[in-house]
Length: 251
Image 1 (cartoon, rainbow, N blue to C red):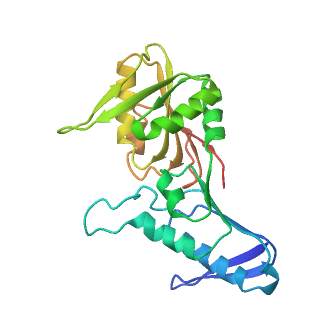
Image 2 (tube, rainbow, N blue to C red):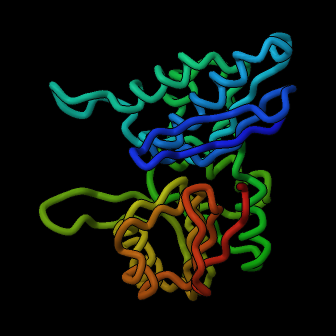
Image 3 (tube, rainbow, N blue to C red):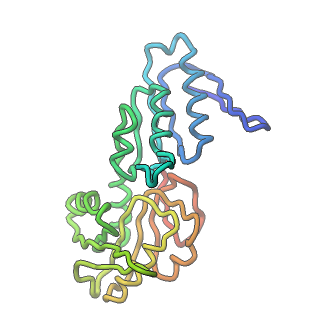
């Protein structure tokens, strides 16, 4: 299926179907404008009579609001629920989400399935040369453990202990003389990764690498270069042109 997107000077987004058939939208979906592009395409496609018996699939590479997977404070909006309700209203036959931040996204979005990030971690793992995998916190441990079993790799958990001032990092294993690969879903800034890398090197790690599926780096990118040796990521959020980053294309 072919379609055309127009954006007017006032910000309006409009879609036109060029050729009918099964619909498969592949999009970053990391901003609200992307959501309206999706809605415009789906509405235009649904209006074409010959498409009534065809299948519609939405592939989301970086879901906006995925970290807002609960109501953090009283009287605040539950942002992932708002986004999920919008997507559900479009009634796709299937929604694919690359490495969602938590299972809440899959629970809230109808007919959704997870697209695994394993192949990209594997590429980073092989490029480095069989490093120890590091899970940065308890939330990342389960998925990183599954990856370590598939790769037959050693895994060491770490945890951030919050206190007054700068949080402390706990490393639950021996990294002396080893290369380490921190594996996580998303990097907004990178302060935790910087602290973790510093602690790993303090405990004898020779090099520390970082893999994140969704590389936002809205701040703190230059500071990461002081402690991380190299970053691996996908281009699910944006394209990055920097020798410090190896980026795997998903879109």
